[in-house]
Length: 250
Image (tube, rainbow, N blue to C red; front, side):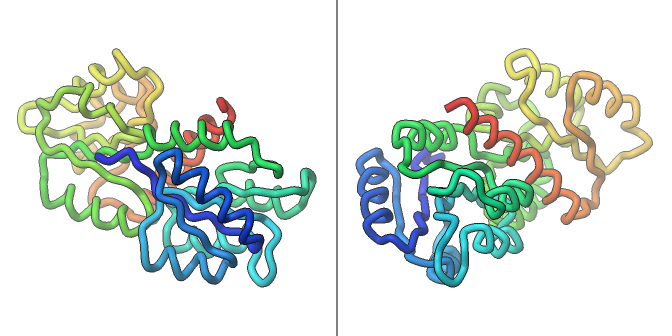
């Protein structure tokens, strides 16, 4: 799992994008520039990014409109705004619609770098399920929508390995002889607040286990066959909350 991030910088001021790209490259990130929302969409279609850093007010397509279009196809791609306008209706709209946060211009570079450093360490959805076909299908679907994914099919895996880079864990409750609740208990010993989303195809049979898991702060339970729109909405909600916490901490 490579911690290096690929960041798309979008601003019609090319001096700004050039300066930011140089700073981020020196810090060890891959930084790609775009001078408009339309160009940004082209680059996102051609390459995978871990985050988009975009100016709010640009000719043609503003930063919030860019976020809207990205969110339709890649709800897991974090978008962060830059602005020189502290009080702006566009910013409020963006935050209401799922933008991670806002950096004021002139940018506090140390704060920006600290956010990306935290993002690099907390950007993975970990799928824990002993059905390799299910894991791969779900990973492919989530990756297409901008999420980063790792999968584990061995229920005996060390929980420290599971949680090393996890932002969210999708945990199947029905392993071969292993109770998913026991796995969750092990996770909770070291990570009491890490979002764990339960998954099972045994609604009635696992009802007691589900209640036990929810009692120790499992986020929610989804049932197989998964309803993909519900899954994406839930994952996006958890991810947005996590990323906004990282931004507040910086």
